[in-house]
Image (cartoon, rainbow, N blue to C red; front, side, top):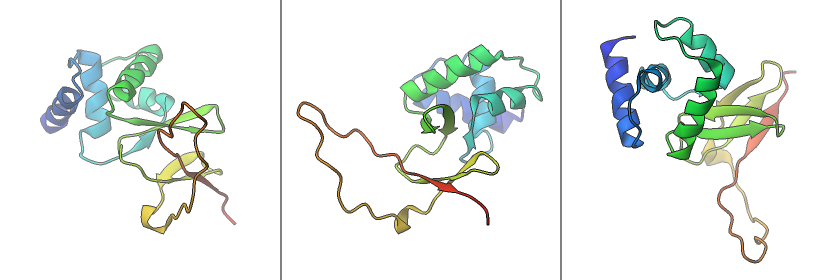
Length: 138
């Protein structure tokens, strides 16, 4: 990992109020070290760690991703109620799910129009609306 990637990762963790442990820093550098937003799964991040000097178990990846979500550094997007993807871009925006490759990408938010949502039941409020548009290549 480059010094710049480690620096970005350290700053990102600091912004989330997380202590930069060795393993957190390795994962953070992989996620934000190049300054690009990305979509990933826990498994794909675990595979990416194999190319680094820092060895991280899959359980540690899952626990660390939960911590990153809890402090708002990443968003979890669930597809089919069972497959979780994560996004380093945390603003509200829709996603395309590509069924053939099982990958997630950003959809243009400016083209999405939601005219009305149902009222939340009494004693509840709508926290957020996730839009995942499933695509199949023709």
